Length: 157
Length: 157
DNA sequence: TATAAACCGAACCAAGATGGTACTGTTTGC
DNA sequence: GCAAACAGTACCATCTTGGTTCGGTTTATA
Image 1 (cartoon, rainbow over the protein chains, first blue to last red):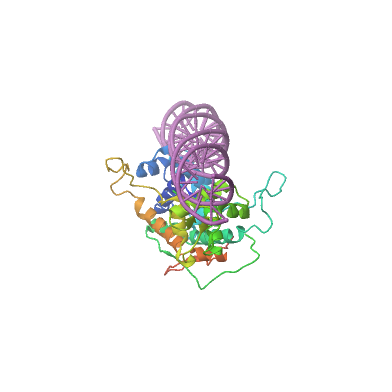
Image 2 (cartoon, rainbow over the protein chains, first blue to last red; image 1 turned 90 degrees about the vertical axis):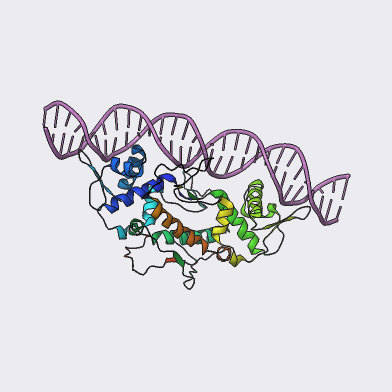
């Protein structure tokens, strides 16, 4: 299931705020007050971003968080992975504790082929939007390149 | 909040099934059995699709649902609208019964500008994927039309 | 070295969403 | 008139979401 929940939105807001003040150490309180959002909520998403390696944390007095890498090399897809966890449409193949597939269809499941296609399409779009785009606030509209049809039989994910 | 929930997936599956048998009247039972999904679940999404004008319903003995329009002119965005309802990231401006905005920031909300951009980008991508693409099972990769090249590290996906 | 600013991390909880189901009614072909 | 099939609504257990709380740790600074 793909979702961009409200907490994820907060995370994107926080990431943008830090990216704007590139390299600068900013307390969670400041971010929260800027957006008029509760401090614990913002600290929560900042922890997640830090845990995912997107931002750095600085403890102690005068501490906070900072974004030190290149905003152009961080994609929206990466941010969503960190904030929401990896996702997939129709988890056809979930596995039980013993590693056996639970899917009731399994053989020649008719949905997998095209659901995988949707996955690729959406993920591809997310991968091409960078944090820099978010900071600039104006995004290009993604365009489907229909001339580059992909027909692969054995996808490895 | 953007989400593609499991029920929405079922809806997409059902739509694809009907589109494959273009014009043919198919009972909900048949679709459900094909995907090994509970009949009431499939009828639920088929009702939604019918309500949204995506498919036609035929009552009485020998009835069912049929897809009669052009699969190339139905977009994934339209299907998602029908199945999940319209969505937006960060509903900055929700209104109470008297029509007054609830948003606590309102003036010069820093998030609206770029969140709107994300909305446009994602919706644009969904609008360019047609039901026909889903039926074929192989999707074109969405490409962001940027004048400036983006730096990409090793693709892991 | 005492203090306070700030992050860490885990647990907790009410409220809402999700996924399924059930039941009664209506249309219609045979 | 019977039964197949859709229509509509309401229901419910369970999971998720959004948000809070609390005790602990790190560290600049007075």
